[in-house]
Image 1: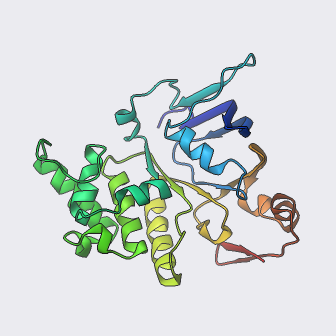
Image 2: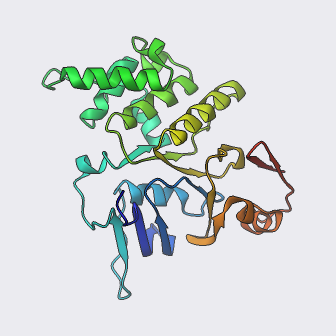
Length: 261
């Protein structure tokens, strides 16, 4: 395993419109580490996701800054897919189309949605697609069109699309958004299975129960900066969360999951 961090952000500033979405943010995540990034709306979570996927870049400024993945400053987007499997709500909307589950997962090899006649699909790609569908326990969805699936089923198809490259980390943005209780439970169990299987889980959310027990480190974002960063039991306290969300809270831990009200 490489000694350099998987993700290394140092003094990043991102301006979106008139808003400083990230304000001198510094954060490093190691290879194999499971991390939750928690914050209220407007804290910079979505912007941070877009920086990870190279959709946004820092503003140039006099102070030194660094944006590295596995120690490198520049990456081709196609090569980046083998390091970070991005699963966002933007991609969820983009991928909900009239393609089968198998085609949608397979299309992850090409960075597209769906398979086109000019694509050179190999037997190894098809084997890997079936393997991922089995891993996520959704082989029964292979022939069903994504736009006919439930939100939970479609979310797992999108995760499969990100996994075909065997990325070092799976980066998830609000993974249980729009899911009912049963679908939420199923998705969390799948994420726990993946975490135990060796892939890093980087979870970006504002919802405490999304943080599966395998995640031991929590980063709190506030106003585009890291407000707290450390072991889960030290960070997820009533005082920290009350300050973060600007409202009084009580915190309950049960079975490795945290909740606040």
